Length: 279
Image 1 (cartoon, rainbow, N blue to C red):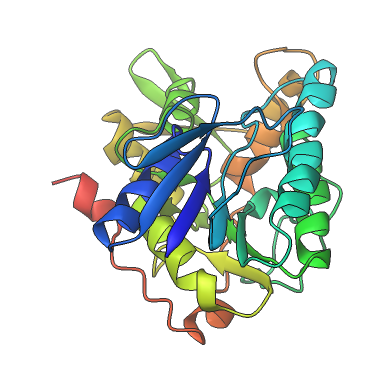
Image 2: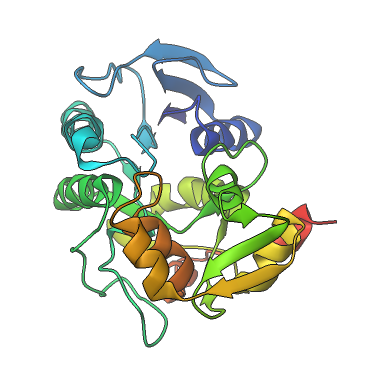
């Protein structure tokens, strides 16, 4: 098919575009910059309606990402909500896979695995709030919304730099005790994006086949020993330190494990895991 991939110059979008081309699809990349393969149509998600002429289906990954303060919320809303509305308007009648985030879920801690019926709301970041609002539009339009958590892999420009901030004096200082959490290899997300073109509309969690222990993962990724500090102390610092946010603390303390049952019922079988990157 002729597949439109928005945000194809970014980390996740590039992985989807490459995999789609390798699978034989005619890929057209939409965004402010060209993607790694296929054709290119310029699109500024913050204010324009995309040109989807000739496209049979759309995978939408264009998004404002990160952990900004509230002053950036309007800019995030223009892309993650307004851009979604314009994309859905242009895509009317075509299958749409809208890449959401597990950040749309209400913050934890969580007593068990989080499935798609878990409450959505109460997000502590502009990213989470605007992704949740955009997702509501996508689901109302009948799209598939994929909810990955902490996407990692070659070319990551967001997760690893954030993790490196916890290193001081040759130690990784982590808030609270060790927890178990889901992560998502970018290849697993890309494969889910293509498979989901034939899934019924609705929300689906996407992650690696098994969760990981936080302390082990960060010790191996960062190459330093892990030490713990009280989570309450770190949350207090987050209220007065611009470079540290409550959302960032939540990501390391809440221990979110995603229930993959709904995606597995559609044939989702994640093949990559963190160990593939640590050999």
